[in-house]
Length: 151
Image (cartoon, rainbow, N blue to C red):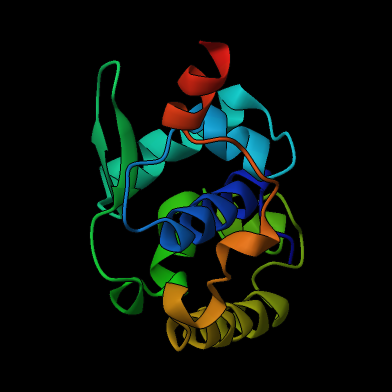
């Protein structure tokens, strides 16, 4: 099973936000600090995370986003469920009934049990369990440092 880039970026954005709980972080800062991810992708990820209730945003010139709850309360399984379009390992699990052996096939049931076990493992892990310190990110000057440097 492979997770989408959307989910990968969502986890990275949450890890970055967890490392900066004391302030709002911006999309541009997050893009730079996470190694140059696509700004467009990060904007979509932030919108998904906001809609799912993992982050709260503030619009405007001094805007940004932050975690909406304690990292210990954010379970990675919930993030995966909110960001993955489906967990269909085989085409037939996504509603495609074109396989001629589907009525007798045992693979979808096995894959369903594997999916349940996979998500259960991520449900055991919180964002706090995978959070890293600020030193692990690319250094991006804070807004106040940038404006002071430009003066």
